[in-house]
Length: 128
Image (cartoon, rainbow, N blue to C red; front, top):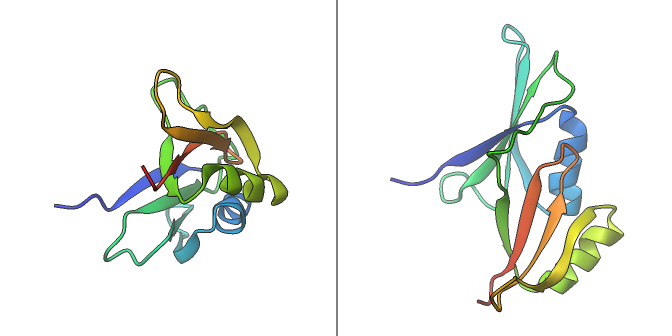
């Protein structure tokens, strides 16, 4: 067994694809419209779906925003240097909602960013 993807519903697909590709450096792997169902799926990631877990963005054409709810936590992405990654994200127009630094009660360096729909993304050092 293998984890294939995580799905997020988004209000503005092009804006979300721009965030995940231009700001977080993912690649758009595939995108398909489903006119009969009035939705589009876009799959993004850092490598081929056959070997990597990816992110599925679902855009329902008649929905421009969602209530995230209180059960959702975050997506975690490993980076080489959390501080440098935050600098790049900030320069590209991304929003840092928790500045890089050690986690509370621990030594792991982390930060949090937010995507256009308000989903939280945790950045963790790959070196730990």
